[in-house]
Length: 569
Image 1 (tube, rainbow, N blue to C red):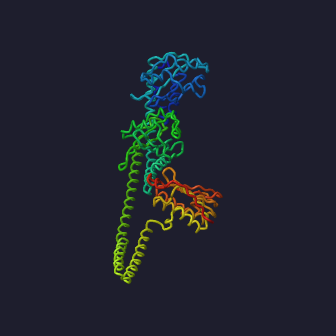
Image 2: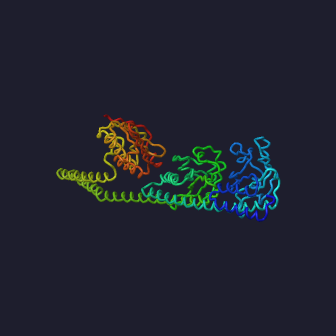
Image 3: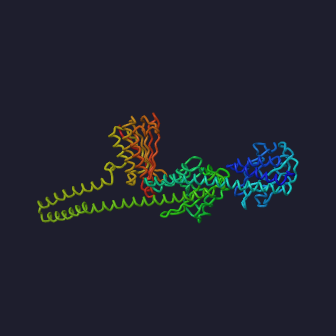
């Protein structure tokens, strides 16, 4: 390299440029250009570190390392620091320089970990484009203790070429990633808004949104959080380690502090996750791969309270975080719109219920109320007849009262039937048992709580699901006994039914023609904001579990107690 002429230098730069232009992947490019550089400069060994935006090094490429640095899968190169890395991190490495003594080689010699092949010194060149630096190039040769200014200038020129090539490849990768992620965003948005349009209530939205994120995107972790206090956050749904955690968790202290720090921001921010590796709080600790970024963006609906954050963990290279942030902001906007849609749809349904109640009130006033008023006036007339001892007139008045009261009772029953199935007059437990008897089934029913205090909508939903359950058992299961449990758990009413029948392969259920009843059950439960779960296998019967949400007020109405009812065969 010492005797290289100007023409040879130009030829070297030309060959390096050709090598760079043939590469479309960063690591392949670095490996190829390092090999070509050593070949044309007659240097012996070299390696390259890439640095992320925080200055953390990644061992990216090497050529002809001595045995001492190859130990344990090149462990001496992948751990610890050295002068060139320290200078880079301190922003003191601005140009190509001579390294008088390589710390990694010195440590290998001191540890007698292998032959260093006489390598002691190397040149260090920062890889950069403009003011942005992103790595280090180290090259050297056995017995070469010094690089001239001309040699360092040539290496600096090569480093500039590498910088341009890395930037080109990264821009290409970023555009590819952006196109892929926005395609996924389209699929996510369609699925999310289809769920909301089908009647999903807001309480289900967090779990559904996170499930769809895990389905459509390749982020190793996604979570939706909501502020529950000044500096407290609850994790409404979290997908990590390929598992959905849908029970509400308290966010770790380090995460709550970071969210409070950025609570005034309107755009995606990267959180300081240095503390996360020490929390050990499952399942959060499952989502903590090293050298990954935790990105957070506020979810701000127009008609609902704010204080929500969407979090994802991006395991890709740091230069793609800008793309992930753009996509995450768009995802948050879609979730916010879905929350608004669900809330407005819930309000619309409430208005329908109010209108229905008003209609019933008018009907009561126009029919039953008028009849009762007529009975009242007739009763006063009968009282007057009795005072005057006009018994025949009193008898006729009482007969008239009987006819009108029967009409009023008939009208009242007609209105009630529009609201509530007649079977439920004696309570949900008795209705289920009596229905099972009519089908020839032995029902063993266990109730935790006073089920007569259930909200009407929940009671009717449970009744319809129980009817469909018992119908399916009687028609298809070949069973004679059904165990049913009704209990409250985590602000929900849980209905569980298990029969001793033949069971079914759930994967074959749609093709069997027996899935219509299951679909109807699922629609009823989901319309009430709940979830339906099935478990079955041939010869093992079927288990049906429906979970229906209850408000705090409704939970208090279900008086804690214990009731066990066993129907006769």
